[in-house]
Length: 156
Length: 321
Image (cartoon, rainbow over all chains, first blue to last red; front, top):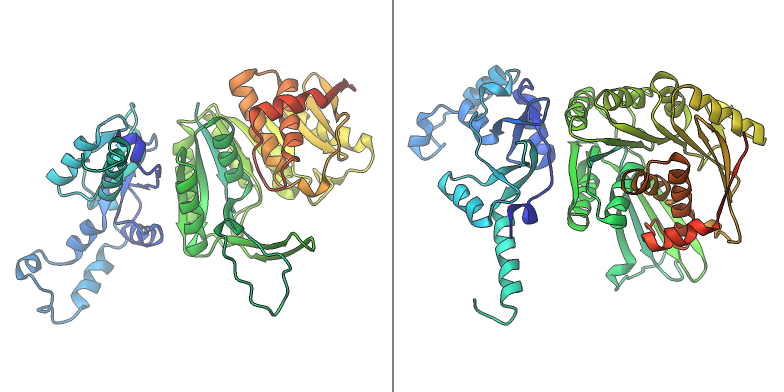
């Protein structure tokens, strides 16, 4: 089974000059944790995730504290989000994006997901244009399907 | 080959089949097949029909809203894996049409929820995405109504962008949307939607001559092919080399089976034009044959190629002008 067999054919995306607020609202409506950032020809310029925004609004030392209970109030968070909400997402997106092709194997895609600690990957066509996304549960579903097809009776 | 369908106002068509439906009663439905959730809206219908007809892939764009929009997306994803979705999800709810079919008493009870209102930021995002997507497609189908907040000349803007990217543009619409797109930026193939009106280009069509004038007017704005449904069993088609009357011979039509015939028509024309032959008259005949074959089914269904090829025998073409 290939990535093309299990990918989600959804090419929802944002453009790099859209602002942080727009991205947050889109993510909420799409129930997504992130979106590819495209140029006008559908090539992937970057990937912006809610993590990128959370990291931008919470001071980095908080990660070391392991808990947010030290935060005296949420004013700092509000202030920071207010400061950046009109900024373009290009400032916060990841610029080097790891992609897979439709004819890549599931093993290759899972390897990338594990190695880079990603939850989903962008799938591109032969001309490097966005054609969909693939996530961990889709890959696992694909493997389960392969198992059933190869060994309808029992263990592999 | 790259087909893009645009549905700015998608709907969730829900059907419940309840024999002896009675108000003020509890009806339990045990068979899940009697509870149907169908993604709808004319562009989406063309996408799903292309998928059924020849497993043809397409990209579907538009706005999906709220909970209803999510069901539409999920149903498309689950049942039509070769449709690529590129909808903008908005907060306001998508349309929902609920019909309760009682096959015993032949009653249909319908409840239609209103569509969403589109905000400017979402419209602007859509226009940019559209521009991006048409750079990789060859055909754009723009069909159906538009939700609140969308200007009535949007189809003209979309047609212009698609044609600038060398897309052939098929439009099925009615009212001001149709008049504006034809006058401002005429699509390549136009099929006025006559389901609830006999007005085309602002004029009421009554006599045969009214129909011919309306079709010729659309051709004069630059269309290659115009298909106007004239009476139940005939269509008038217009190309740059003349006017033809297509008539269904020796076949009876079931008037209660007309749902989805327009979408089957457009789907079959696209299939014919790209997969069989670019001859415009034959393309229209094939479309009409698909619409005729569709009337063998009650619901919106795409008839298989074999049934379309059979139906085409019943279509007679006469040159009028």
